[in-house]
Each structure stands twice: as structure tokens, then as C-alpha cells.
Image 1 (cartoon, rainbow over the protein chains, first blue to last red):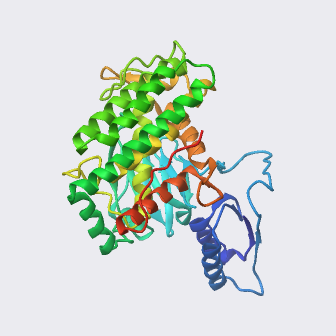
Image 2: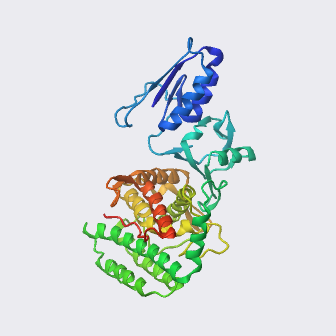
Image 3: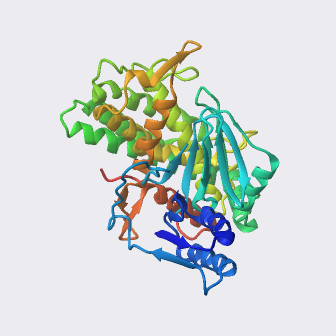
Amino acid sequence: MIMVYDIEEKRVSKILKIGREYLNWIQNSVFEGEITASKFNKMKAKIKDKIIEEKDSVLFFKFKNNKVFKKEVMGKDKNPISDDQSYMV
Amino acid sequence: MGRRLYIFKSGRLSRKNNTLFIENKNDNTKRYIPVENVSEIHIFGEVDFNKDALEFLSQNEILLHLYNKYEYYTGSFYPREHLRNGEILLKQAEHYQQPMKRLEIARKFVEGSIKNMITVIKYYNNRGKELSSTLKRLSDFLEEIKSVKNVDSLMGVEGNSRDAYYGAFDTIINDENFPFNVRSRRPPSNELNAMISFGNSIMYSTILSEIYKTHLDPSIGYLHTSNFRRFSLNLDVSEIFKPILVDRTIFSMLNKKTIKKSDFSSHLNGIYMNENGKMRFIEALEKQLSTTVQHPKLKRKVSYKYMIRLELYKLEKHFLGDEEYEPYVSRW
């Protein structure tokens, strides 16, 4: 899943923090990662609490599986994420 | 789901903003890891963490496994057990205390282990490697375990079959840069032994992590005596999966030449994998763990990692008397 957001400055860090709990940060205002339906619901509930719906927007792009999209990077890959089932640091 | 997090660099692991945060001491990079997406952590580097971090892992039911710099498993942080079940615990203990019941389970583990060794050897035998004598010896051992009277002699047969199996490694690999000769531990005498030791260590802790997700108690083992060792059920179950997961990973890495002499270094008369070697190995093992195979009963494909969990559920069923345990045997 890809999550992108456009949030007023004073609330942006709150959304960033929620995003980091569930998904991989890839660049400013953008996250990617796999998530289960129940965790997705939990994350949405947390986000809903923090945003002001008239001003902020958060978009989610959902894919059936990770084979139907391909990421291409130009310039610096700010946070390379491997696509296997592990994190190595 | 839930990914495994491997930490090779030195630094600090902490809780920050309600998620995991890793600071690398050497290059000063900082990185957040989504806590909701992590199921276990394996630490190889010199990593600091505090009580707050451990409490956070416990809250999120994440296991932490530690390895020393010579790649040996040194211990785990096993959070408060969330799925403890008195019924299963009693049954598990009962199956340990009654010698016949214990022998029956232990025998299944050895049976699964030998059958999977045979599967691996057969694969190479069909590809033109002359391994028929190894196959013969392994099937003899498979016969022998049927008449074994106690767990100690079962352990003996297990050891002999493993020796016969390891005896085929040089024929399978056939690479003068990576001779096997004989299995040696503490310290491993050459690259291949280092890979086996490392792979087995990861296997033990991976299975321990899966046990955590079931109702089973990892301290009661059947083949490996439950004595003062903290965990032994994971050692039992590993026997079944070592040939198909660890050994196949090693063979495929050597065949594809994804591991080189330079991925190893020597310390204290032994040969060990260095950081780069370990990372290569984990990558390959992860790939093998996520490989999916047809499940004989479920009629669908499942990953090897999930197959391990299913194996544990089968054990639960056995303890509860629902269904007799039959070990997983790979088809190819």
C-alpha cells in the first residue's frame, strides 16, 4: 500500500508518527508497506483522530498484491526497502 | 505477516514515538522501523537497548534473539506468554513423562528429519550425482528407528544418519574451494561448517518465534531432553526443517556462487562468516522461507515459514488427542 498525505504544517508530524508505526517511510509525506486489514483500520482510526477533515487529506493506494506494481526511483533513494520478508540494518 | 528485523550494525535500538528506532553508531544514520510490521528481531551487532525498549517489545509481542560475534545463538527475550494454555501445557508434560508417549513423538521427529534428508539427497542423485549408497544407508536408518526402544538410542541413530547425510555433501557441492570433509562445531573448521552452524542457529530461533505464536511451551522437548536448557522443543522441530531450509540454502548459494571465500574470516582457529557473508546468507534463507509449496492437506500453497507454524499446530492436535502427529516431508 502507498500512503500519501497533505496536512497542515502544525499537524503533519502527528500523521508522520502514526505512519511510522505501521508503514515504511520512503520520502516526505509518502509511506509504503504491506498491512493487514485490521491494522489498516486501526491506523485509519488513529489518523482520523488527528486530522481536521475540512483542511487535511490522506490518500491510500491499495494493491491486490505486490506483483501488480513496480517502483522506479530517480535520484536519491531516501530509504531503500527490500521487498523480501525482512528488514536488514 | 510480520517481517523479521536483522540488525548487523552497531548502535542503539529504542522506542521512539511509539515505534522502533535504530541509530547506527558508525555512520550516524537513523531509521524508524514500523513496530506493527515486525514479528521478531535478530541482533548480530553491538546493540544497546534499555528496559523501556524491552517493555515495548513485550507489549507488541516481539521476540528478540541475540547472537555473539562468532554467530552462535546466545539467548532470547521471550516476552510474557500471551497464548499460554493450561490444558495444552498439561498434555505436553504428560507426553513427556510417559516414556512410550515421549518416544513416539521423538521418533516422528527423527523420521521427518531422515525423510527430508532423503528428499534432498534424492534430488541430487537424480541430477547425476552418485549418491545411491547414501540413500541406502539413510533408508536403513529409517528402518532402524522403528525398533528403537528408548530416546537415547534414537538420538544415536539420528546422529549416525546425519553423519551419513553429511558424508554426501562433498559429492553434492563438488567445489574445491569449499570442501566439507567432516562436520565440526565450536569452532567450525571451514566455510561450509560455518554456514551450517550459522544456518542452524537462525533455524532454532526462527522456530522458537513460531512456537511463541502457538499455545505450546518451548521448554518441553521430546527428542532433546527437557533438562535445564531453557528451550528444547524448537531444537526438536528444527530437525525436520534443517535439511530442506538450511542445507538447500547452502547448496543453492554455492551453485549460484552468491557466496565467496571473502565472505568468511578466521578467529580462534575457526572459520566464521563475516558481516557481509551473514547478510548474504540471511537474504538467501529468507527467500527460501518465503518460497511457497503445495500443502498436502490444505490444497493450497503455503510458505515454508507458515509450514513451520502448521507443524506446531499438528503437535497441539497430537497432544490434545485429536489427530496423530505426522511430520512434514518435502516432496522434492
